[in-house]
Amino acid sequence: MSAKSRDASPSAAGERLQKVLAAAGVGSRRECEELILEGRVEVNRQVVTELGVRVEPDSDVIRLDGEVVKTARNVYYMLNKPPGVVTTNWDPEGRTRVIDLVRSDYRLFPVGRLDRTSEGLILLTNDGELANQLAHPRYGISKTYYVVVAGHPKYEELQVLERGVRLAEGLAKVESVAIKKRLRQSTALEIVLREGKNREIRRLLARVGHKVLKLQRIAQGPLRLGALALGDSRQLTMEEVAGLRRACHAPVTPRQKAKPVKLRSRGAAQPPQRGARSQSGARQQGGERTRGKTKRPPATALPEWTPAAGAVISYEGEIGPESTREKKPAKPARRVASQSGRSAGGAARGRKRPTKTGRSKPNQRGKQR
Image (cartoon, rainbow, N blue to C red):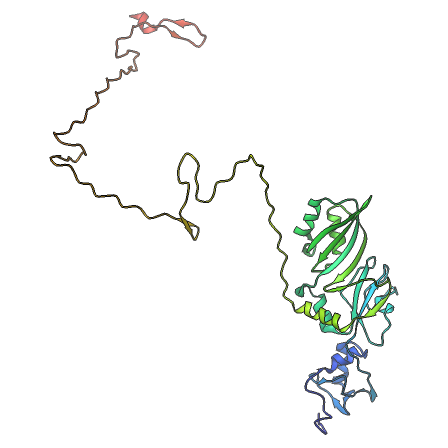
């Protein structure tokens, strides 16, 4: 590609040409790449056949087949989606789409999705980079929902939603869930998600036995639905767009739950402290603990023992002839009965012994004698 002048050539900065064409509604990005390779696109009167060319939409003049293309800036809209509207750009059944409810000269597409029976906040834009960051779970953009369920969920059932439920796609769980209002036959909940599986909230609540009666998205990141009427839309301000960009680049920190505290009555015994033992054995205060092991206190040196004058020490540890230690008297020998039935002390022969029936019969050996 030859350039007549440096000012007329495509800009080295800016956005890729195929992205600008796609945002202007020429076609998909792949279709725009094919138009460039075919040589049908001009930038500042120069034919472009390379895909790496960047342009400035505000200053460069882009033509397709000789016709000037009206370049589009990035635009951002918020829509309060009513039930029955689908969040897709193409529907084979011809149902009402979210892009049909937003009046814009630009080619928009929805950010994320809401199922047909749900309602609430949905973003539409032609900024593909920001849309991908808002919808991708890796960036962890929170989405807040107002949900009305049948019945009255118990606290244990809501804890199951936070711990996670195994679905076909894997483990699914909510970031947080809180009870907002208890009605006669239903309960209003506020649920926060950081990832969006297909009909995730409805499937999770069905696992704990509660049917969803109403589901409305009320916030996405720092952006809240507010008082926008059902079916209406408005363009985002520069401050709101900047807040969404900051939320995408902010580090995602998982919420840490506090450990449950076990309450004790006043009369209950307190648990022993670290290093203490029971009354039977011993150490009440342990030494310093280092790397999981108890470091014992240093041993105290005993004073050196010197024997008294004139004492003679034997190897048995007794004092010699000058000792006055008293010796204990020897115990008498214990009489042990022999296996033949005779006792060492001359027990009487012929003693009767009990039988299994309880009667006593004379000793046969004594009877024979």
